[in-house]
Amino acid sequence: MSITLYRKYRPLSFADVTEQEHVKRTLRNQLEAGTVAHAYLFIGPRGVGKTTIARIFARAINCGNRKGGEPCNECSSCKEILENKSFDLVEMDAASHTGVDNVRENIIENVRFAPAKLKYKVFVIDEVHMLSTGAFNALLKTIEEPPPHAMFILATTEIHKVPATIVSRCQRFDFRRISVPGMVKRLKEMANEEGFTVDDEVLAMVSRAADGCERDAESLLGQLLSLGEKNVTRETAALVLPGSATVQVAELLACVAKQDAAGALSSLNKFVEEGVDAVVFLDELIETLRAMLLSSLGANETLDRMMGGAVRTQVLGFVKEWGMVKIVGFLELCLDARRGTRLERIPQLPLELALVEMCIDIPVLPLAPPVPPAPLAPSTFIPISVSDLERQWPKVFERIKEVNATLPLIIQTGKILSINGNEVEMGFQYRLHADTVNQAKNQAMLGSILLEVLSCPLRIKGIYALAEADAATSDILEQFGGTVA
Ligand SMILES: [Zn+2]
Image (cartoon, rainbow, N blue to C red; front, side, top):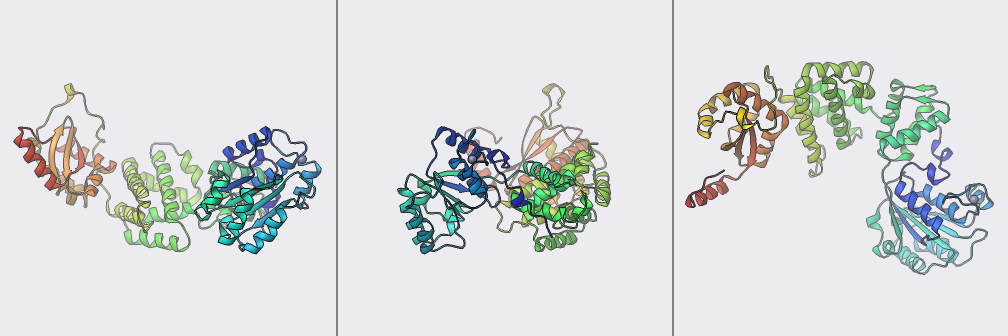
């Protein structure tokens, strides 16, 4: 049996509601100033406090001892609503009462009569976008000319399905997903109140799994507490939480360490089939790599907060094996993939590509401090000409081939355009190639090779330039006696 926290800890005042500060402040100010609207539209994902705030508002507007916009929860009006006994708070779930008859019966007929006991009759319609067209039209007339005692709060998760005519009649509030820290704080209070202690990292895992939905987070916490252990640790939590992301990330990293691209992709597919969201998972991977990066620099706190036991030992092994430069390279790949997810029709594809690259592309650079990114002061810099560089290029290219399998194929298609200070501009016909060359890990590798071969601190900057366009430009410039820069 799971402990039902959601009802038990339903906030009684605006101040108790997690986050949504902008909504709470505006409503309290309106209640104080007596400037409340007659129709509100609450928009936002499920489980972020829309109906909770609607109920607090219904009490506050009717409360005889309201203070600072908050209901007293003691007077007869507040008590009647809290005990679900009031006829003047009408709550309707449009998902199960979609038809025009329901709206007519529950709202349009009802709204004409004065409130039974309270000052205002408050109508809360949840999932309002589910109403039929006929029902919306009937509702619209009432909202356009509401009796002075009527108050409407419409809540929806899908604003685009609510007719514009309705939206324009309402004062609109956009609710946001609850942040992980906000959720952790709230869950911690509940757990302590119930007499449990739960590790912060477990609460963070619960919050992340709930993806901003407080109701889901509270339900997961309820399941954890019902395991009966007074102190809920990561190990206990693993029994309840859907496939712990940290363990899954470690499994993928193990494939990367073995350069097993097939294994990495089949693990990822298994996770996705189990219901893991590829984008959320990519975020977990990025968070883990970030913790590993910090750890490679000697700061283990973040990693320790994220994982423990055997997984931690395994991941620390990867940190030692890979070192800072390679972890930075992996992070770059994953961040690129993260940017790509918005554009891809298959959201897991960018992650798959990144994983393949992580598996096949293990730069084994024995040497090489990374090149300083800023241009050097002119006095310390020995210039090299384009023709000098072109003459030495075969040596550079051979060295690139020695340390990397894929990059030479790209470099081969590039053309040295110019040298500005310590920056070599190299033109590529495809944007992807230029972008690849500009990735931090490739920059670090190319920089160290140039330094090694030419004893010259250069950086290669990939530039996307169509060959044809270039030729045309240089023709024009030549006519005018200029040069291609
Ligand atoms: Zn009251």
